Length: 219
Ligand SMILES: Nc1ncnc2c1ncn2[C@@H]1O[C@H](COP(=O)(O)OP(=O)(O)OP(=O)(O)O)[C@@H](O)[C@H]1O
Ligand SMILES: [Mg+2]
Image 1 (tube, rainbow, N blue to C red):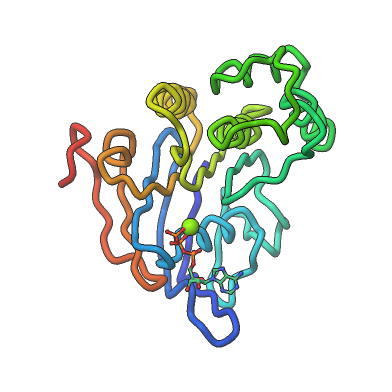
Image 2: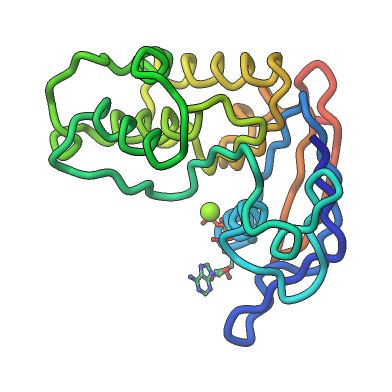
């Protein structure tokens, strides 16, 4: 998969939230976004998912223009800000509902995805009884079901304990090895540099710095 972003800008109510962004991203790599609050990381992720339309410029995925040739990217999984789940259902039931909407994952695969994010597939607790970190883990599980080729994770390590961070980091690296294209926003620079292949810094809706990570140390 190849994502090409050309001169992407987005203005919301007179405010420029994305400002002339140009980027190229390829499968088998992890792209790490950092930047202060309000710098545009989440907006860019929303644009790549087809959830907001560019004011100008284009996002091409494998040559097809988002919002023109297709409404949403094919084969995408995303955790962007607070995911919504149905409070009265268990984690497994919530994933089953998502899988029903989206397509083809078997119950066994959903259970494996839950286990991979450190949740017990047999846990009878409903979502409303989940702790903050458990909710975050379920959100990540939802982004991983059905083996998406493009995965966007906005602050995946939020609210996770040490084990959780390790489990999710391992899962992210596994998806990369399997050939997915991963886009991750993270405020913890050390964490970001430890997994990302390319680091992209944003400020006031612009890309202000782009560097390749060598030996997972910042350049
Ligand atoms: N729903 C919205 N309507 C209008 N403007 C918005 C909306 N959501 C965010 N913005 C604006 O878009 C800009 C970029 O916000 P964005 O959420 O992308 O930042 P961010 O880099 O993800 O920040 P954070 O680190 O806090 O998550 C900010 O100026 C913000 O005020
Ligand atoms: Mg954000």
